Amino acid sequence: MAGIIVVKANETQRQKAATPVFHDWECEVSEFDHVYNEPETFLVLEGRAEIQYAGGTASFGAGDWVLISKIGKSHWKVSEKIKKRYRFG
Image (cartoon, rainbow, N blue to C red; front, side, top):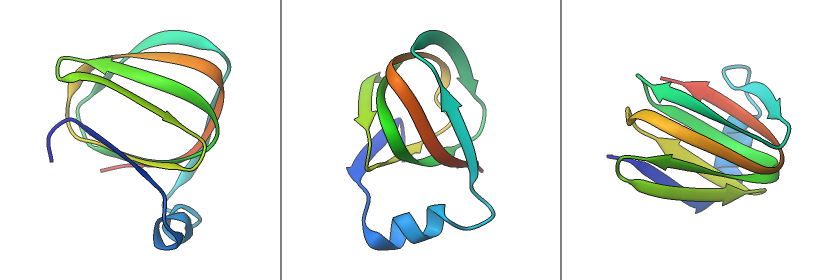
C-alpha cells in the first residue's frame, strides 16, 4: 500500500477497532503538521478531516476506515471535531 486508503468500515473492522491495541484520540477544529514514519490504521467515530501529503489529499469522516502508509510529511485539516480509534504499526 502506498499513500492513504479510505473505505467505509465493515463489521470486522469496527470490531478490530474495539480491541485494546487501538487507542482513543480526539481533536478540535484545527490544522497541524504530522510526519508518518510508520503506518497508521484508524476508525473515525465522529467528525471530519482531511490530510494533505505529497501523494494528494484524503478526506474522511464518521464511519470511515483509514489506512495510512509511511507517507512522511502531512498536513491535517480538522473541519469538525474528530474522534477516532487508532493504532500505529
